[in-house]
Image (tube, rainbow, N blue to C red; front, side):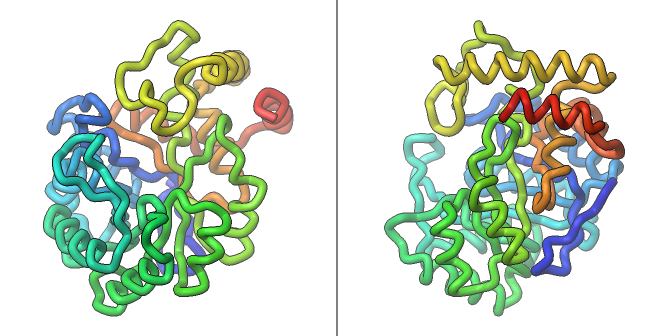
Length: 312
């Protein structure tokens, strides 16, 4: 395993992080069951993965609880990252609301600490920006938690370029977690250069575009989960069909190189300047074993040129 350090921290994180959205299960994903999730977490530890990223809203607390149960004996050897700023009245997608107020953050941290069976979080992130709450209030709340010892570092997630610039006026933002993959590259224009300039680590989520970059879907695929609801990404219509055409070309390139489509996509992502870790979604250990083979080798110049041609 390769390890990297967000410059503004003393954390050492694995280049591939364990994305724990999938193990939360419904209503977002159909999980493979808690037993499979726990085996996958154990396998991740065996393979040298140290970064485990979750959030309260993943399964409405379920993801945090599973991680807390399995990781408790290894607490000093891992980097535990969770989030705040999304609340719910009932465990339903339509009941989720953004709330990054000081009061909400102070309530959420104690709930997460309890579910994760720990007394501190290594990296605490604002899940989505809350347009109704001043960024200064949110950042000051995070600094207070840091001073109290409940969190070691704090970061943001899904913040725009302007929101990120505003945030660092009020505190040392360690990381920005953002969607980044071959099909979603808009952050390369401003966000990635800004993070490099200000020593902000980039945690790239959805490195496989929620499965599209694995090559296992085609134009006839119809999703029945959250991907069909227009929440995030392009999984229907003309945009989805254009993406599938690109992925088909990537699959041909992968076959000629003896790698899978997804392995090429993750390797490319980790070679991008400024990227600290790729948060690969995991639901079972087979997925994990396959994706871990994305590291330990480099794309050839020809492969890199072909990938840029396909996804320019």
